[in-house]
Length: 312
Length: 312
Image (cartoon, rainbow over all chains, first blue to last red; front, side, top):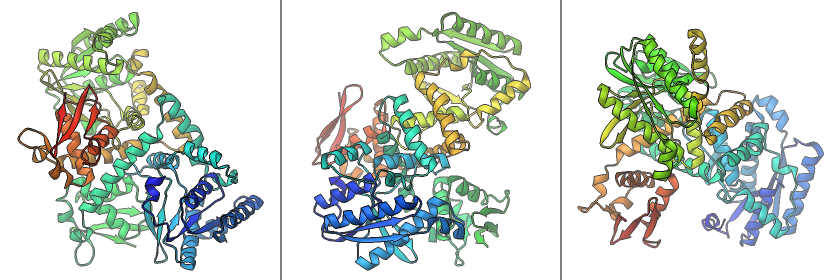
């Protein structure tokens, strides 16, 4: 863990997202042992497991007291939000957490939030994304920023290269207590099955650990995508009205066309940017193909007079 | 299949690799129906299943006769080669097949060899490579060339986007016969388990087909790697003695450093170019790190006076 923690300023104020589960309890304890002074323990109560959820919240608040740290807790009506916003559980829960983190950061003038994702989470995420149709391999970043209501939220994951087995060892050696089920409060069926069925089967078949292989491959793939994204400047392919000027785009290698299209759709806040959506949008460039394609959220990408633009 | 076959000249002579199993029997029948005239049926008898292997060879020879096509068959002592060359079954079998194809191509003046790998093979290969530590995602190419004893062998896989289910439908609709076990003659335990255990589990968990997602992601990853490889010219980083000149290499983004190192090691015929080997070799660039690292095959990569070179 040291490797990652060295990059963080121990004197700065940081939020620590603590569910009460094993991973976040280990993160918090490790940070305290490592000399972080200005930590704020943040707990989001998703209210998904009735009394047990309230038990988690109380446990985390007491943990903060034990370490002599500030506590920030909020309860979120995830089920109600799913209905009112017509979004899936995973999306609603994540957005709710981010909103809570932003409020906690503003209250405590913190630099960002530290989360307990580890190397096994990373491999599971990479496989999950691959099976859902990611473009290359996509995993969790050590550090990223999320924009929530015009606030920029910095998220850092110090344990991202630490294996679950090392976390278990740490729990034992430090005699830590945690809430058993809270670890899985955010674990939905598909992810749980990847963790408990797919990963052990792969290790058995390959007769070796597969997490380092998957995470290493994902690192290369993400570095390659980042490099390619850094190679294209979207503005160079836009006309004064902000439309993609096709003759400029089509001079590029298809790999860079993908990077331009990705940035264009992202700039227009098109959700769910899968590999197949990028590929469909690039088909619209072809003057013998259909001149438009559907975008998620009811919009269209249209081709007209050598330009591509988004229409409501 | 049409999509791929359109790129091939039906009047040219092509070898078709036929094991006698379902996939290659379908490929052969489809090519004949599609109007390919100058096909040579090639069968490599790996002699791994005693009498059954000879039965496969006879079956394929009769199949060639039935279609009125030339036949080229060779038996290979795979087990003996494994012992004498101290290599694994999969490697020895593949090298032996390539050598047979080259001899058949020379005898029949063929343009190359057509093989029956399909989309499900591709997904299984991509996952297998990922679990072994590939750099990004690596799969089978629609077309590639292999150099065997200074001969260049062109290998084309017309079925690479065809699903196994489509191949099964084709077998039924055409009433084709094939050798049940020959399909698995090259399928070793790990691959078989990926096919029969991992893939069905993933489909069940995701509740959708995963082959298109995996293959699509691999296509993007391979395109990105190819593009990056095309961006670097190895010679620009070598000194007159063919050693990597470190100050030039270190000016590059790490993604391009990987591409240069990959090409350098490949040029020197270093086998097993995994992601972790490339990463280890790039560590040698760091003047505070160890000045050499082990390469497979008993050689070393060494750093000396701002140069990297390979030592026996």
